[in-house]
Image 1 (cartoon, each protein chain N blue to C red):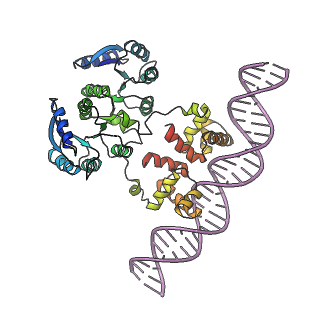
Image 2: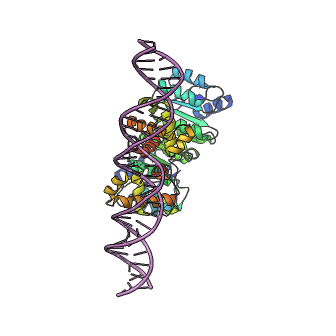
Image 3: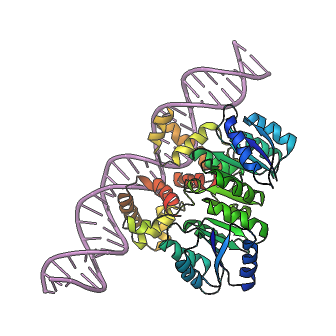
Length: 205
Length: 205
DNA sequence: TTCATATCATGACATTTGTCACACCGGTTT
DNA sequence: AAACCGGTGTGACAAATGTCATGATATGAA
């Protein structure tokens, strides 16, 4: 398991190297100190895993990773960062990072690296909770006093169906569907079925 | 590191047990064969990690986990499954699972368990890609030949704004906004602004 | 039984939405 | 100059949407 370690703080790279070397399955092929170097060293060594800091002077870890993944679709990039920056997180996901964990507890680095090596994706707890569509949602049904039928209708609205289509599916008259939606919008304090669909995606699905 | 293993196939539990025991840091406190037993055994042993199958006869792994997490907010549940079922995945996230990995390659289980133990969350690659809001999106702008203005309008539609509101923001007439949307729907082959908003959330945001 | 409640439906209505044909205009291209 | 084009606007229209008042029916509680 060959790893390339990049962080603009040399103290970090060296201690990471020490930690990683303590495991006999792991070999640190090189260490770099900039996004730039990351790209360069990755090209040269083609390591199994790139362990890289997000925020760095000059080229950020994200940009470097993007570049690298563009060249090698199967690159396994594991981001390591001191804090959880919302913007970076979603970008990290979108460029196809295999992991995003906090630097804090060093013991978790080795298992994380190994899990990534084995094809899993690893994310810190704090990271996951920053992603709206994944973090746990409270029960909208209870919070806003929506009943089963109303929920069913919302689901269909969020599928982009018209009132007529929904009425056919639910064996209701079109007018009834309209009425239900009217009530729902009232309860949720929204305007229009589009906002309702958006609400569904943000809060329920 | 104490682990509770639950799967309704005894063959699986026993082989998992063997694999896990091979690591000296890991101790399998017990094995169960139903969601029911999972809850019971968890109460009794309070293991560090619950490794549980999703689909089981009777009480599903998800339901069991939900029950368990309700009782112990810090429970670390790692789902293990043969296939990736969309519905289960999002539910797993929502109830606060620490991981969701496929049974296929057994070597990845130990590192995954350890990473979870260290506070990370672990998900199989195939799993993550099932989650629309996280997987990488191609450039919709190019793919469908949308121009800047059209993208701007889509964004506002996906914000739940009416044509009138959009027109005010973009300094266009309401009619023009309507025309634009009409064109966009044509290009994207959608019906209605609601579907457009949904499209935005699934493919762009 | 009588009353209350939930569920479904109707009709009327004002708005919003989507489509279409056409037109204006500033800048290119020919 | 003439033709063309992208961006913008208008008017007209049909359809869909949201709101409201009202009513029918069934179910269950008093």
